[in-house]
Image (tube, rainbow, N blue to C red; front, side, top):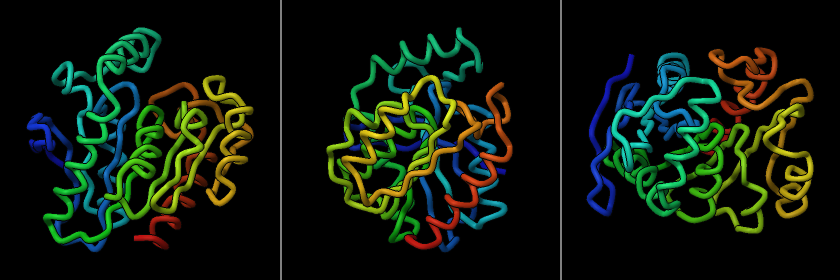
Amino acid sequence: MGHIISLTAADTHHFAAYEAGDPKSKHALVVVQEIFGLTAHIKAVCDELATHHGYHVIAPALFDRVERDAVLPYNETGMKKGLDLRSKIEPEDLLADVTACAHALNHHGHNKVGILGFCWGGLIAWQAATRTRDFAAAVSWYGGGIAQYSHEEAHCPVQLHFGGEDTHIPHTDIQTIRENQPDVEIFVYDDAGHGFGCPDRPSFNKDARDLAHERTMSFFASHL
């Protein structure tokens, strides 16, 4: 199991992060939270990547920018508060936090670091791929808002996963991404909704989650 560490971004912001896995592991990943914070689910994802796949993983507590230790419930109340907290954080600050995680992994000798984001974190993973050069590969699961930035050029290979029944991300958005990014690998899971990879959410779809996980692991194995 992992543990909480403290990191410092380039702007001197101190934030908590969850670290899992052996620093001497061959591969490294930054895992980026949903709109609900550094939840037990995100920690479990890190633990699985470390225990079953041998990754050294760090997941930043992004809400520390505005509220320390904010972990929200998977319901409408939690979603509303998460959106409010997100609105108070500049995108550049989010990138500073995930970049600080990448640099911490670099410090342990990992020359190539991947980034894996879920929900809000899925958009951040896309922006980390297009706006920084700190990552060797990026994967996004149901990242809302990517279409708006899909004209931006990625500096590393990217893989995107969406639910075909996702009411938060229109099919037109996915089509826009396809048109603007013909070289980006995109998977759509027909019977899956938003958050299909999280067992703590009503939308959890085990078949879609397992297939997306398999594809994600294969993608990182090829690029890290």
